[in-house]
Image (cartoon, rainbow, N blue to C red):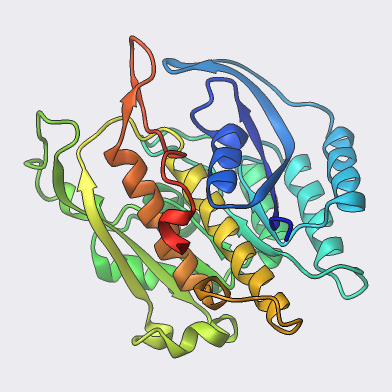
Length: 323
């Protein structure tokens, strides 16, 4: 049985810690075949970015059309779009590949907005953000903003769990079917600065994210979500580490891969081929698997250069979850 195909439409990180490099590692480790369409090129290492180059939008479309003709995806992860024109082009592609006239199966779409970094730095301008909301949001099945990105979308700060829960509802009203707001641990950090440990691999408090789906998106998940449409907090131990470059890319890619696996297995059941727990994977399961995968990677961080550490997020093979 061929592995399910997952696209990553994102920027390239020449340092290998984020972007399509991290995406492909996660997709492969989860047991899928990854294909990439590059939106922007960066010259960077573990210390920072020295230059950025955006190829012509027409070349992005050429990449996507060439892939679609031969390697139809079961899931698509979208990362850094970078400009208004790129966002519009990706939106057009998604409209076509998820449209009623598309001959293949409609792929599941995970959108990592890549607007503001975990450290709070702005990564795209307002025109690109507006284009992403208008052209890409309507075709995304789940949005995975960090706390800063959610605040930028909502144009207000999220200072309590109740704020996050209410903010998730407002984000769904923007046309997204489901949302996972990351970084709930920072709510506690804003009130207390005592969560610092000299041991980089020490667990300090919790890393918690909030998941919410619209009623029309729940389907099979509705059976297993005790809170239904009220949403679910996902919590794991949190490692005190500054070396989390690429975790957002990896999380969204792992969600896409897990959904692709579940989608493939369910399609095979009707043909008497699909077996095992993987066929039961729905969106809430994919989010839990992806969060566990990223957490394990952060906990196993190793030295990547003389300057920084890099989380070996591809060090947890997919059979860790599915065997």
